[in-house]
Length: 331
Image 1: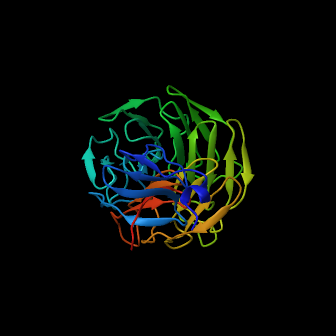
Image 2: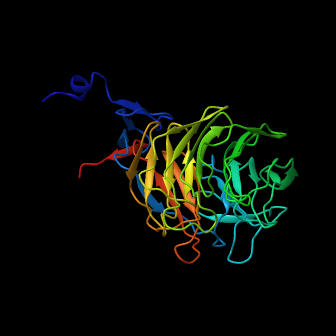
Image 3: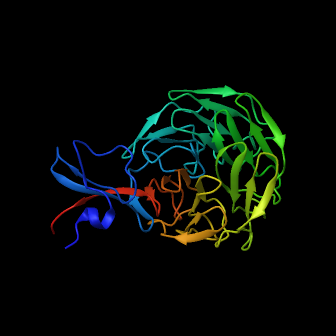
C-alpha cells in the first residue's frame, strides 16, 4: 500500500498547535489534542441561524464591510417609528450600543464595526446628514451634497461611496467621501432606489438591483441591472438573475453576495458574483425584504427586514470555497 508521502510528496506534519494559515490540502497531526487534521474548502454555500436582533426593523443600514463576528446595524423603521438604535454583533448575539444623533430609516452605511459611516435617509422628507461611528459613539460630520433616501453605500470611513436613491424621483447621483467631504462624481447609468452595493472603497464598487418606478413601484419596477465603479465611471456588467429591490448586498467588486429583497414579494433568493456573472446559490432560510447585510463572499451576515411582518432574524453566510479545518476520525 502506498504511503501518504508517496501519494502527496510530503510527510504529515506533527505540530503542537494548528497552523495559523493552513492551505487547502494541508494535513497535520496536532500533538497537543492528539488528532489528525486537514484543510479543505466548503463545496457549497450555506446559511446558519444567528442571534436575533433586539429590535425587529426594516430599512436599517449596516457596516457593510464588517465581519460575521463583528458588525453593527443602525437606524431603521419599527413600523412606526423611525429609530436611532444601534446594535453590535459579536458572532452570537446583538448588544444595544450608542444611538445615532438623528433617528431615520432608508439610510445607507459603510465601514466596519469599529469605524462606520451612516448617511442619508428619512424623514425630513429626505436627509443629507452623515454621522461617524468610532466604536462607542456617533458624531455628526459633513453632510452629503444631495439629500436622499433608499440609497446604497459602501467603502470605509475615509473612502466611501453613496449612489442612487430617491429624492422626489429616482436618482442616479453618486457621491464620493474622502474622510472629510462628499464630492459629486459620475452618475449611475440607471437611476434607481432600493439597490444593493458591495465594495471596499470609493474607487472600487458594485451596484445591483433596485426599483426604477418610485417608492410604490408597480409590478415590473424591480431591476436586475448591475454596474461596476472604477473611481470615475459606472459600467454596465452582468445582470442579476432575479430583478429585485430592497435587498442586502456585501462583498467586493469581484466577489459579492445579493440576498433577499422584493422581486416583487419577499424572496429568499441569494446570488453570488464572481467578477463577471451572478450565480444562484443556497437560499436564505427566511424570505424577506428591506433587510441589511455585512461581510464578504466567504463569510457574511444578514439581519432584520420584513417577511410580511417585521423580523429580527439573523442568518450567517458561509460561501462556497471558504476554507475549513476538518478533524479526521476512524469512523
